[in-house]
Each structure stands twice: as C-alpha cells, then as structure tokens.
Length: 260
Image (cartoon, rainbow, N blue to C red; front, side, top):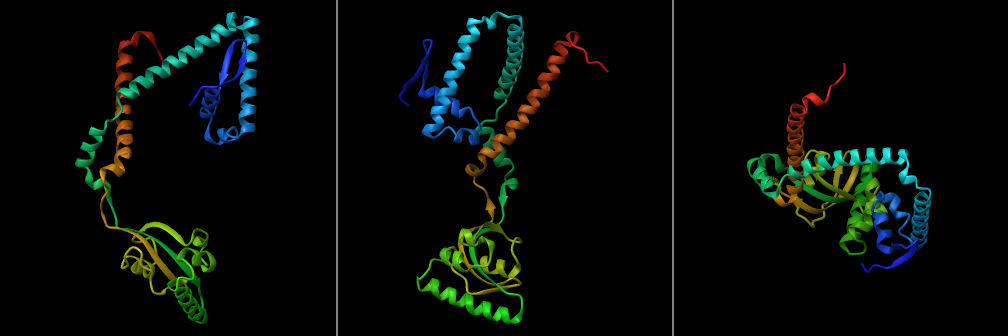
C-alpha cells in the first residue's frame, strides 16, 4: 500500500497506513464501522484529537510527574512479564515435523466414519390420507426436476416443508446414525449426484439428492496438521511453563514468600 499523509499535527504525520493499522487493532465487529469513507473520516478525526491530547500533555509536562512515572513503571513491569512469557511459549511451539510424527504414531485418532452431504425436499404427512397425498406431490416435484423445469435447490426452496428449504434443502455433512433409518439407507446406497426415488419416513415423503460421499478412513495429514500443531504446542507450552516455574522458584526461593 502506498503511504499517503492524511493529516499533520505539530509535525507528526498521520497516514493512510496509520488508519488501517488502527482498524486492524480493533475487534472485527468494531472495525467494520470504520471501513466506509465516512467511518475512516471519523477515525482520522479521532487520531488527530489524540495527537492534540499528546501535545497538551507534553506542554503540561505530564510525562514528568510522579503519577505518570509510577504508571509507566507498572506498564513496563507488565509488558516485561508478558514478553518473557511470550518468549517461553514461542520457544515451545510445535513444529510440522513433530506434528507429522505424532500423526504417523496416532492414526487411530484421525479415523473418520463414512459421511455424506445431501439435500432433500420433504412433504410432511401424519395421517394415511396425508401420506398418499404427499407421495403423489413428491412424484410431481421429481417430475419437474427431471424435466429440467426446476433445479433441485429451487424446488426445495419452493416446495419443501423442512426448515432447510431456505438453504435449498441443504442438510450439510452427516454420518450414519444421524438420520432416521429409511433416510440413511437411501443416502448411503446412492452415489454423488444421484436423486432418489420418493423415500417414506415417519415425517412424510422425501426426495433426496446426494452431493458428496466420503468413505470411512483416516483424515489426510494436510487436513489435520494445524489441529495437531495447536494441540502439541499447548502441551509443550504447559510443560515448558511448569518446568520454568519450578526453576524460578528454586532460583529465587529467598526472594518471595506466600502468606497463609
């Protein structure tokens, strides 16, 4: 990003980069308010105001007061504590090689069950008459889809009685044991891209489109690498912290006491 000076206060420049850094330092929800031109203008005014307060503080020699010096001493102490902890934790971060070794030795932890991703259209029914009507209706909808008059997703939006209708009938990724038996049997006997015949369950009649099939197996290392690195890092950092605390308590045993 090319640096552009947006304001100058007593010789101190405020640039577009300062503005972007200020936005990035905020939490995402707060930062969103300053992404517009109007928001950035307001933020620039705030940064100018802060510089004016800085000028006033220097003019009043607030940085020379005992109150300020005490405050800065405490800030320095806290920052130094945090810096020492950060250095310790960074030195104990797990490497990709360690993660790979863990993965190879613990592949059982990364087994995944057979999974499927599907959409469906549901016509609800409760009584015998409603089930007959639902079966006829689901066949009509299937005929529309097969004729190319509607996509499966659009038909789900237009006709399905399931709350998933607003997502085009999308049920996401699921495994065995998560759906009613009739629905599950249909899904796991279909190939990706196939649309089922009408399927009757306790809820009514369904039309199902399987979008993905994932066989049972072991997740590839690339999919779980960051999870392993994070978990190993947490364990290594906890061990490093406990070891360091033991070392420091022995080293500075005469310099501290805990009452009670």
